[in-house]
Length: 393
Image 1: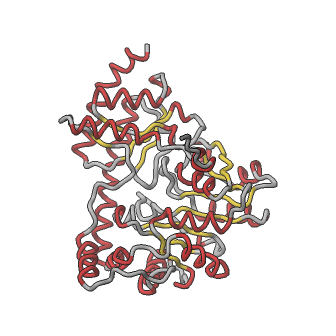
Image 2: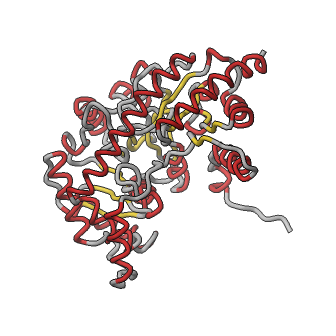
Image 3: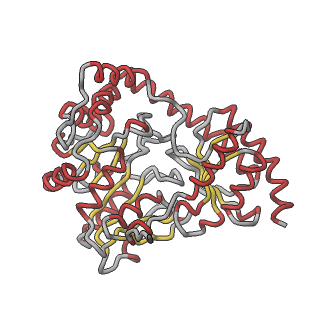
């Protein structure tokens, strides 16, 4: 019997790095010491106060559904966080708690994109963004961006690429895979460009908190009508708890609540209770110590890779990634990643996972290992470049 699956499913591409991860895990199972720089997950485990709050929630029986918009206490806490960190008064009624940042993206895409319509997205960018648009029968209009615009959409690019099927734009600040940050001025220009065209601005602020030498501006400082995606996974270190949030204009909340009720009922209740501990001063202090550790890693790995010949044209200001041009070494990025995994047991991600623009000559390194492991990785990469050059020739 021939099974036919949906065109929607067939159109969504797999993560190419997952094949490399599977091979890395296989090598590890065989006893090899693999250094993982491929997956965008902090190496720190969830902070102890959050774990304790989660355990207490389970012990207290907080295992039932919550309201679709999430625990009122958690929405209040997030509202307070916006006040404390950005000086913004965000009505808790505008905040919806979601299953991860992915849940927030699913809600926004479902609300704002009709079949055949599209958002403008930077290329390179996080691949799931375009896949979620395909899931709701929309599409991503990928806009090639490079170091000249710090790998970000601009108001000028919106004007150039906007067409009759455009309904909005999604930007990320800090961005994955490049780590670049949009200023308040740049966000305001984007917001104005979209409003002039009747479009919506959606901003991924999932890596807020993980910035170095500056604090990222929230788009809500300059555009109260924007949609904001955020997550407890990165700065708050709760990847496996699957918890995020969406800030939306008040008029959109009833429709979003209806979608949430139908798509996932509610975010995990025990995770929501645990997340209340994120906003305690002692827990914030843990996160800030971790931010400093990431800054130290970036400040080591960035010059070390440049010295080896990797071209990293724009210094990342946030997240925990370096997006590197490997043109100087020749060959294809996927084969390059395979070579280093097989010969030196260092895993990193090919540019193919982040779009199409110059993807075959870029790779992403995630500095989600401690400094001694990063130093080991650089030693192995230096050795592997010698064998790659002879291999490429």
